[in-house]
Image 1: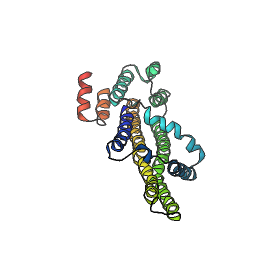
Image 2 (image 1 turned 60 degrees about the vertical axis):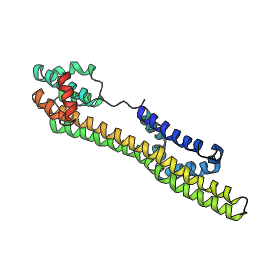
Image 3 (image 1 turned 180 degrees about the horizontal axis):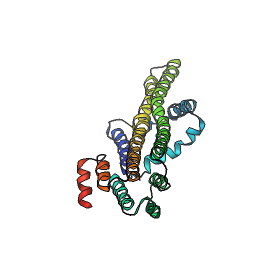
Amino acid sequence: MDIATVVGMLLGVSLLLMTVLISDGATFGAFYNLPSILVVVGGAMAAVLISFPLKTMFGLVGVMKKVFLNKQESIADLIEQIVSLAETARRDGLLALEGRLEEISNPFVILGIQMAVDGTRPEVIESIMRTEMDAVATRHRNGRNVLDQMGRFAPAFGMIGTLMGLIIMLGDMSPETIGTGMAVALLTTLYGAVVSNLFCLPFAEKLNFLSKHELLTMEIIVRGIMGIQSGDNPRVIEQKLNTFIPPKLRTAAQEAA
């Protein structure tokens, strides 16, 4: 469970509810309007359906799960594992790495080690692994784009709902109803802003962060596998890979080792 995502959502919603609670004369009922919700949420989803293939929309559930349920791999631990594999390869040869595949959990590391053990040419190994990285980046970008577009469309449909509400109000305007009608009309703008800025756009940014982290780990793996395949000294490989992490983490990892 991503604690930051949950805490951020709860904090945002709580602050909005608290603002209503402590405001003089405000009631929760005044901030609820079903037609406004339908215009904003339904309209944004309809626009996204037009923008993307249906298959991409079906994948939105899996994308949303990643926002709440994600486990980032420790880069320091990954580097330590690659250096350990390099030590085995340098001491016992590349074929000895085949016996260590069972202790590796990262499928991308397994892919690189298997190709190295099979004697695949270095340029072919790097080409295949970078192609896999490009495919992962494309999948991440497609999922993130859905939330980005929903974040763009929600405020637009909020404004559309406001205009619809104003038209309805002006069609049957009286001094007694103008205040209520204006409040209901403005609710759709509020809903659009909240849906966009508290949910869709932050979710898209979280996916962007997770994508960058995963691609960074994949880049480290590619560099490590190429070093192992070329027979580089494990300490040299470690120094090369440590450049991907901040100096403080490098020091902590070295002290732990």
